[in-house]
Amino acid sequence: MAYAICTKCGDTKAKALDGCPACEFLPASSHDKAQAMVATTHNMSEAKLTMVAAALMRGERVELPFEQVLAYMDMFEGRGEQDAPVRLPSKGCAWLVFFWVLVGLAVVALFNS
Image (cartoon, rainbow, N blue to C red; front, top):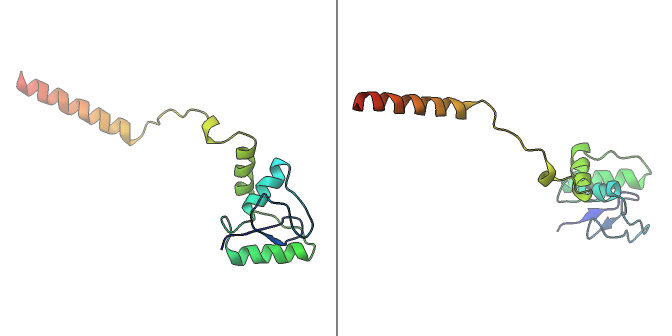
């Protein structure tokens, strides 16, 4: 069963963005929401999530995976993939294939004339 933990006290809750039943913390900022989304069984193994919850319950500071938190923050702040800069194709294998197709067509045209 999927579940989340409160990023303030470590108690379990049904959904990441729900308020905590124990400490009543409700993720409001994009950073809090992003951390809440990462602290779920969707993004972490149950074993890792249990370790994080235990550390939070002991009052320890816990660092969640930075890249995952940042990705969720981008999503909550509207800076997701749809706003990514347009990437031009690189000069790689596709250009080499294109070149040899043109050479082949030129050779065929020479032999057929």
